[in-house]
Length: 260
Image (cartoon, rainbow, N blue to C red; front, side, top):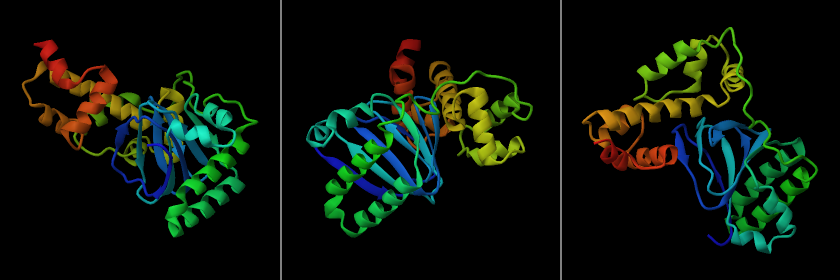
C-alpha cells in the first residue's frame, strides 16, 4: 500500500484480532466499537477516536450499528504529506483521544463526501489527517486511557463468577452486555469499572481466557486444531492460529509438536 486508504464502514459484532504493516486511524460518527491495542483499550464512539501504530496487535468488536471511518496510512504515504514528521510522531504509540464537536462534524461531513465522491478518498484522507494533527499537536502524546490502573476491590464486580461464566461459554459469542448483566450494571458502567479494576477491556480479558484454555487443549488433548478453535470460540482455524501465535509466539501446530 503506497497511499492513504480511507473507507467508511460499519464494524460488525464479530470479534476480530489482527495486526498490519500500516498505521490506522479510527473515527466514528455514530455507534460504538470496543477496541483494544495489545490488551488495553477503550470504546471508539463519536466522541472518542483511536490511533493504532503499525505492527501493533489489536482486536475489536463493533455494535453493528456504527458508522466508522477507517484510514490506513502506509509509511511511504507519510513522506508526501504536509507536516509529515509531526503526523508520523502521532503514531509513536497507541493512543485514544477525545473528539471535539468540530472534529466530529468534520468527520461526518467527510464521510458524506467520501460516499459521494470515492475517487477523492486520498484528498479527503489527507484533509482528515491534517485536521487531526492540528487538534492533537498541543496535547501530550501519552496513551490516553491506555495505562494500567491499580487493581482494587469493586463491590459489584464478582470476578470469580465472571470467570466461571466465561469459561462455560468459551465456544459461544460473549458480549459485554451479558457480562454486565451478571453484575447488574449498565454496559457503560461495567466497561468502565472492569477496565479500572482489571486493567484491560472485557473483550481482551475474554480473548485471554479463550487462548489460555486453547493452549491447555493444544498441549494436553488429542483434539484437532479445528476442534480446539471451535471449542474456544474462533470462527475458523486460520484466525485461531493467528491469534495464538501473536499471544504465545508460535502457532498451535508448533506448540503441539513441542509438547509431544
